[in-house]
Length: 265
Image (cartoon, rainbow, N blue to C red; front, side):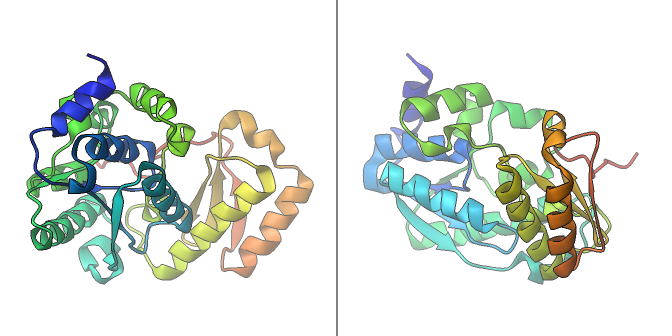
């Protein structure tokens, strides 16, 4: 039995499921398999919260259109949650705990008893307090239970024609703000604008604009740092300072997930 069939089979004894769907490849493949197994008894839910970029929201909509699955949007602001806004090392836990509670409430309204996400085996090796929160809310991870690695997920997404098969992994905009610095709407707006601008000027897909108390530090693959010539840097300095950044620099070490969030000893 191939890996896709394994995943589809995971859903076959479920009457109705709800998939927490972001704009990434992992939850897209889960949604695809659920729809293959259950048809209209599979529902995708995308949380349109304040730390989700417009790019991710568009990707989520596109994926659901490609699959043909029904999509529902959860609209709420995690910026109203002080435990999230204060931005300590448990920020992701508080965010995912709140998301899980919203999903459970929505599931009850639609008579759904099984909620799933896109967590895979590779995710388990990272510091992911958000995964713990989802588990505490009873949310299941079929990719973990069927032992999927990220590379296998991408292969399947490509084979079934999902446009996100090569989409770089992403995380919420709040992850660009170092622990201990409060998450605000102003910071999230300038971070999203900054990343969009960098992508437009460089055609790079994997970009992070870290916000260090108003200083923008841009992270891209180390091999691609050379694309930032004087013209691009001048445009970035001018436009990013207009929206509130006080300084702009390129991180010479290159992109690394979670670089600014160090687990305290």
